[in-house]
Length: 262
Image (cartoon, rainbow, N blue to C red):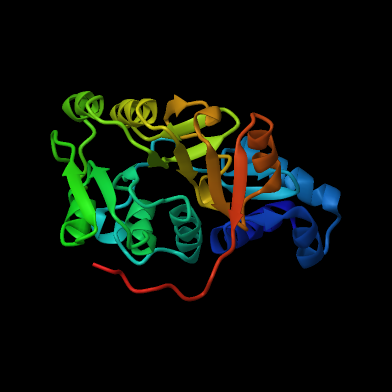
């Protein structure tokens, strides 16, 4: 097999599996691990992959926005469910929470404990899902409504300063040793405002957001009390984050999830 054929095969496997390991590629393609490393270096130089310790992952578009609402607000992947279920353990009776409008925030709702809570959100979808829960006092931060149903403009960012949160759940386009990042400057400004009035911020980042740097920096990882991810996260990226003094929790995936409790 010629080198170009190998590299095409590597790209096919990466698209299918979401990541590749040099040792496994060496065995599968029956070439030396040094040849595989050269292949990975060549593909990275062309901007087709991102190398990691021992393998490679797909290149993430730094300004890639979230999926459409019809795809965003579903039951969630096994990884999102694992992270969200672990995150809900941090919620205590009487807490005031900020919950945004990302897909993992929607998944989190099914795991919230049935105890008295106050929830503040900037998402019409999250508000609609929570408005009939008798144990929750619900507040919505206003502003210009985006197609997603979320509000992150200057007005929404200004209104955040009127609140104080016991706990907020942060997510975004990615997180790495360089910090938390997201797709747009306005979302970054809003996230910074939420963090500044939160007693504790928990980062919700499934493995495919670990080691990723999106378009706009939100702040250092040290702004987070804890980062929750799943078992597929690359250990080298997690170690770099832990070295900045942030606790990392690996959530175990499960095959079954409860029904949404509206």
